[in-house]
Image (tube, rainbow, N blue to C red; front, side, top):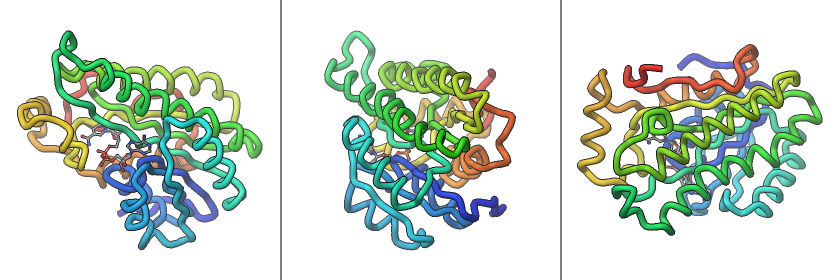
Length: 248
Ligand SMILES: NC(=O)c1ccc[n+]([C@@H]2O[C@H](COP(=O)([O-])OP(=O)(O)OC[C@H]3O[C@@H](n4cnc5c(N)ncnc54)[C@H](O)[C@@H]3O)[C@@H](O)[C@H]2O)c1
């Protein structure tokens, strides 16, 4: 593992109790960052924090709850004295259905977590970053947001929303010391696979020219760099992590 320089830096990772978020948190902690994990799953959070060192914090919260996100932001900023990086990884896949059969409640839940949750975390953490005129935000979108996966319209549309949000806020903050980017991974085997059908998993694998899934560590490597000081001239940008699937 290449060690980035996160000495003295602090980071919030939503969805940090598992999967991609946890891999990002580990990589940043191993590079010297103090990390706060924000996640819905209290038990997984407690297990995840073990071994992160550097005085890791955990907050059990639902990213769709504005008051909870505001409280966690204030508590993290108070404990750390600053928030240098925010990685928004909390997300769900939602079920697989054709759009005309998609359960309306599932559609709303996917949007609430994947789009509104990212908005709320960006919304409340940016003012903390502005006080020091420094910050790095990485929102986890998906290749589905660029291409539109069949039978996953809620997920695809929500991730297109994350891309649009990232582009807007990146431009809004371009003259500041805060950079906001997103990544668009293809499929990576994590617990999120439990939410989708075996046929859909086969479909996603077949679309990847490398012929394999990505790994959480491969995603974490790029995300950690985007969350570091070295990422200085990229903002409002979309970074590919798709084993050759993305064509733009
Ligand atoms: N794994 C993939 O194939 C893949 C591909 C592209 C993008 N992504 C995106 O990467 C991100 C992480 O996915 P993952 O594969 O690590 O999934 P995961 O299920 O392993 O982890 C997601 C984490 O988010 C948390 N979470 C879910 N809803 C939440 C809420 N309302 N509030 C707070 N925390 C909540 C879960 O408890 C879990 O710990 C997601 O945004 C996902 O859409 C994943």
